[in-house]
Image (tube, rainbow, N blue to C red; front, side, top):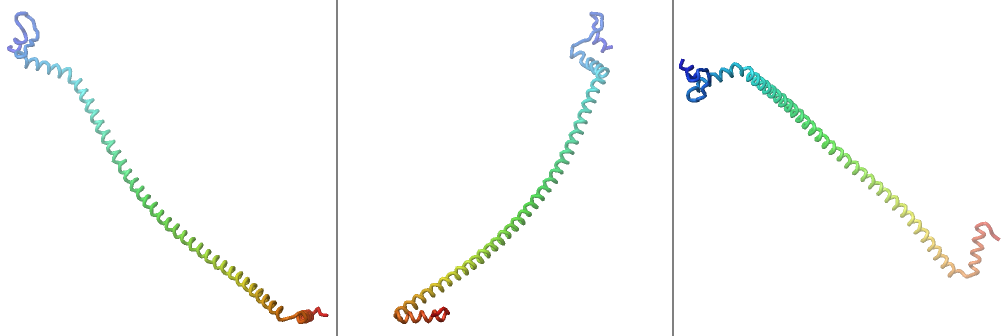
Length: 175
C-alpha cells in the first residue's frame, strides 16, 4: 500500500499522478516502460525491422557493387594486358616493316647507283668513240692538208696537170 499512497493524495480524495521526481521516480519509470512496452513495442519493432531490412539491403547492394567493381577491375586488367601485347606486336611489326623498307631503299639505291654507273660507262664510251672519230677526222684533215701543201710546193703546174690526168685515167674517165 505504500506505493499507492504515493500515487494517491488524501486531500483531494481521488487518484492522480504525483510528479515529484524524488518520491515517484521508480513508479513513474515502471509505468512509462509498461506503456511503451504495450503500445510502442509493435511501432518500435516495425521501425527497427524496417531499419534492419534497409541495412541488410544496403549491405547486399554494397557487396554486389564490390563484386561488380572487382569483375570490372579484372576485365580492365585483362584488357590492359591485351592492349600491351597488341602494342608490343605493333612495335615489332613496325620494326620489321622499317627494316624491310630500309633494305628496299638500300637495294633501290644500289640499283640506281649501278644504273648510273652503267649509264656513265655507256656515255663515256660514246663520248670516247666520238672523240676518237673526231681525232681520226682531224688527223685525216691535217694529213691531207699537209700532203696537199707538200704537193703544191713540190709540183709545178705541168707536173700537177700530168698527175691529175693520170689520176683521172686510172679512175676510168680518161682522155
